Amino acid sequence: MEKLYAKSGPEWTSLEDHLHHVAIAAQKFANHLGLDQNLAYKGAILHDIGKAHPTFQERLLSKGVKGKTYRHEIGSLFFLSVFPKSE
Image 1 (tube, one colour):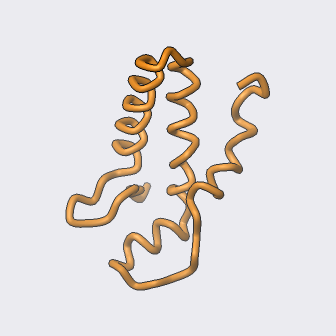
Image 2 (image 1 turned 180 degrees about the horizontal axis):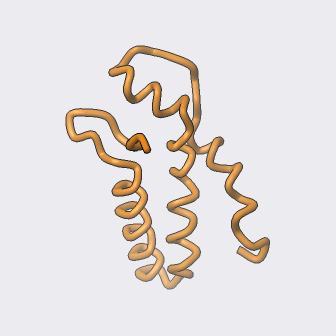
Image 3 (image 1 turned 90 degrees about the horizontal axis):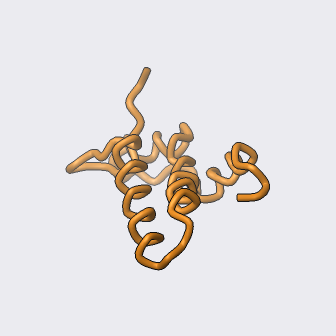
């Protein structure tokens, strides 16, 4: 399986690492604000999971060459059905 990225060079952050770090940060903010930590964790993952789309990955790997426009946040919306309606 090809490695998926969330951020391009020079550090080339993997999507898995990025999702984990952002979700943990969201959870800590939620705790500080007295909000639902589990929901914040899931929401953070939902926000960036669209970066797994081949078009997003192609743009990252093209090293700055402008390609097709792709908003990962919008692509992430396709994953909403994974979550219970109560969330």
